[in-house]
Length: 272
Image 1: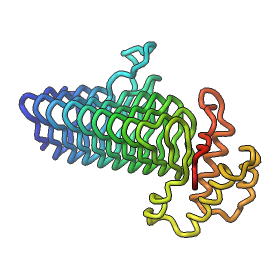
Image 2: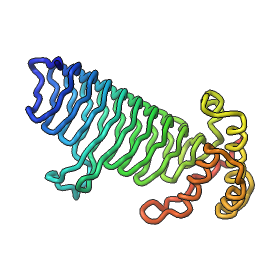
Image 3: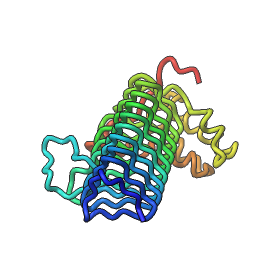
Image 4: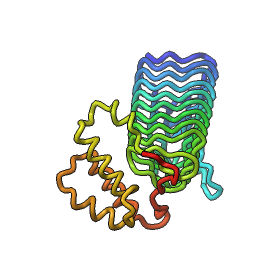
């Protein structure tokens, strides 16, 4: 049986699994689904259309599934937030539901959201992502697996951030960021996330060499983006990791409105 504090307000239409803890003053609206082992600390709010998987932790004053911050949104529209397993949402985190009928803001597994961070409507966040204090993801932003967004990072709407990207604190991102790189200031790629690549046991030395080759063609060769992509397409021996870098660049170059935001440039001061 779930453990629900007597002062919590849980709609009869909410589905609360065994082993869930709902703290004092929590609000859980109708249509919410909460998976086994999830903990809602006092005064957490989970609004309609939200699904939480197993073993999530939602701290005090977090609001999951709130209305999108869109002036044209009709509050009667049925939209969703879909959250996987093993995620942590610390104090004051907010995640907005999607805008279009049937749409969803989506969060994967084992992400960690620090205090006062926010995901806007229709955002997509992958597995193992770390969102540090006061990070703001605008609507339709996409964040790849195992990215780390440092404190105060701002991400513009319709922007894609690749896997294992790491940002500097207070970075501003309004262009697409390819996998495995580091970003500082406003749209400035300052090098590869070499520490992250070295520590990732899924990558071989050859994977790392190929990623460095892809980065060099994109950011150090001086070639136009289209020509650099042609050079990458010729590397038929690349494995999946470098292949994902290449695919990301291709997708950016082929993007149509509103996603045609271009690829983040390399900082002139970069020393990699």
